[in-house]
Length: 153
Image (cartoon, rainbow, N blue to C red):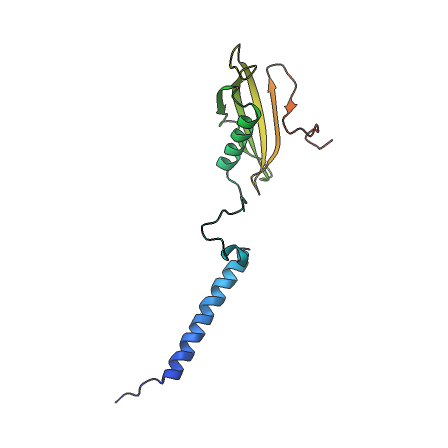
């Protein structure tokens, strides 16, 4: 007749198995750089808007939103130039190019002006680095308000 495994050995086996699973989860979270505080008290709450890496779609949506905010109620037509928009060679920023027909004022009366926009978005966090526009035969204008060029000068 086979002997039964003592209850104490089963309990120790369960505790060891649980400890191994817990250590595995904790090491995975550590390697993925996920802070443990993100799990405490945030169920159903609004989380911070942060990216580990933004996508081209995220960059495009951020640029479209910036354009909408800058030219409220003045945009007739807007579209993204998908042929020219790209990830930079160094992989650090998305270069999004847009075209828009803009009315002269909020009344949406008068001739529209075709403007070309260049929007540079950090690939690491999805934030707009630079947002500029120009019309045909015009110099570039910053919408950032910092009055600097691409080198920050």
